[in-house]
Length: 447
Image 1 (cartoon, rainbow, N blue to C red):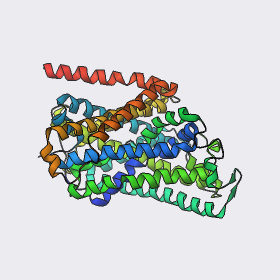
Image 2: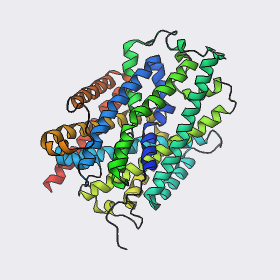
Image 3: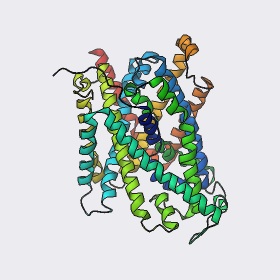
Image 4: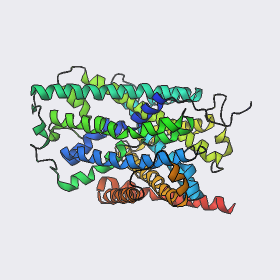
């Protein structure tokens, strides 16, 4: 059977816009926010705002470089051009690895959430979900876009409902069993920084994890119809989405619930809907979190398969992973990612208590590497190709100064992870991955 050699540009503007939304709203917000609030208190709103602004500049740098060359299909392409072949190899495989780690956690979460309704072993719904998503992804990229479109719609409706209900309760001065719904709840329980600056800084690991996937707009570039229009549009709307979906939602949650009434182990969204007297709140939010986990796994399958396809095209992965099926989908790459993902069930069985925290921390560290490579590539692009910069229709604001500022910020986050006991083990384990990659790259170069 003849193989098509190019990915199809089947993602429309609405798909790209919703992939951008889906990439910035995930389990990190729905589940991780509870833990982050316990660490930082009301100052968590500021933490989300800071990380959101930082990642907007990363995305602008990504967008500018993708649009500077029609041949670029991912950030590994310009990493090779502006930093070197080693950067493309290490970053490509690292991006695959961190999405695998993230999706592993999410596929197991699907099993846990289904147990809310059905008393069955959690690995069964996890595997069923993975098989369904794999089957749909194998058909066409348009189906991936449709899946993400509807998954994102569910998330958006949930947060919209929360904000609308919260505003009504604020205006009414509604009474709950924890007190009055009021803006004063933001500072009446120990101030904006109840756990001091330390608690505020320690929350950044979970906040960083909440934003993983924001760069999916860039990964989907090769399959986006009219990228010159759709990619800038999706990236420029990121700040408004962050203000609304993160800052807005957390503001409402903390006005309804004093921060010290929220449990780190459960979703603050469930707690909030329960407080306002919606009897089926837990079931509704459980469904939303289930679709959010499925959405994250869907994104993981998509991004990991495209990264493997790209690595194969550059002869940095087996040639078979670069084969496309009759629907112009990298089927072999999808199948490999699905097989590795299915091993997540085993991981959660062996270390159920530590697995999620270790996986999310390693994922956050690896994403910091990827985002940093994007910024460094952009610095090199500015120096080596001033001609492209001059005619760019999507220039990154304040470059290259903002690039250096964001890189320093990422370094500070890694230092904080090293100080925090919960994240220190994962931080010390992660360099082993990079050592392995550099060794493999060295062996390849000799051969």
